[in-house]
Image 1: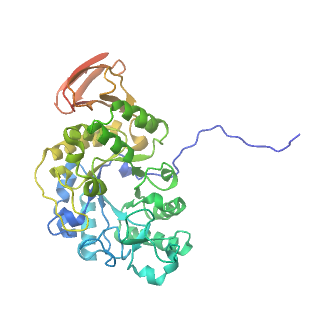
Image 2 (image 1 turned 90 degrees about the vertical axis):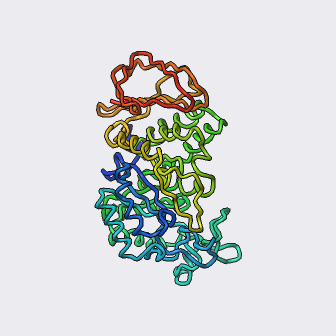
Image 3 (image 1 turned 120 degrees about the vertical axis):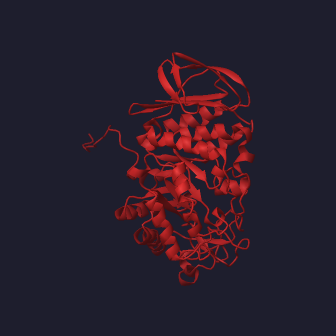
Length: 440
């Protein structure tokens, strides 16, 4: 008889082992491309618009890489921000270290937070580390430095994270900007290309300094356990894009994405929902080209569902072009209805607990309707706050009947500013790509 004693546990365990900063619970996110944000392309020029961003409802500003850009094998005349020449310096094209410190202080004075874009996977060819520590880099079969494999990244060379000293160096560099400049976290470029155990240790060391917000450019849920608060929602973007193009419908959104989202992905983990970002904008077209008449409908959906919403700079001004990536191509700032739309949605997000991030917000629960291939309808509820969303994600004008028997009550209509009584059955006449949002 086997006398070995085993201790089995049937108690559920929390998936996430890190604590999200409290200020992230209802936060919104803004990606800022310093080069293209103004005619000057400087830190000082960004300061002038901080008040506008705060008024629009932005909480966290993600600054695209602020480090000097490599010159060897540079792409274009100005190069890629993601070809880092020095992890401990600021790009002189953007201003001085004093200018950068002033920008960070101004962001904090507005009550906003700032995260830096961090490129841990690779450096420029002329980073000093290449000469000082060539053993920190991956080598090809020929024994030469190599760019990221299978990608068109020939302006950079890839690190080798099997090297302990490289890990120490990169962790200390991450800590430097928190200690010396009081930044609030990082957006980590192609995070899944870097070993997970590196990120998990870096998060431990950063949290000793202050609570930080960490965003990974990746979709792997395992990144959330001990390293990242938020990950990219590429899958959602792709399905919404296909719906806008008429290549699929709401049934795919519900069954291929939402079913997995609510059942498999940890509720405490935050997805970053977006309709545009620097990669999509520069390489795959702007949001007007990609979504056409569906743009407002998919924006409303992505901002109301679980996750932290992202605005890429210029979207609020109706950015209708692809910004150059390796050249100067400033945004043309003008008043546009997008800004009012974001302002309204973000105000609701800040005030209504149902729309808060991670475990702080309510789960998406499906509201059944008789047009399931065309209309997405759901409710989110938390702490006596409630939001009902009815969105026609089709190019057809339709009459839709909803089963609202669990949501009887009197609600405020977000876009008409009128009250709406909801009974057991709600019938709406919906124009193509239209939406109704009710809240209490």
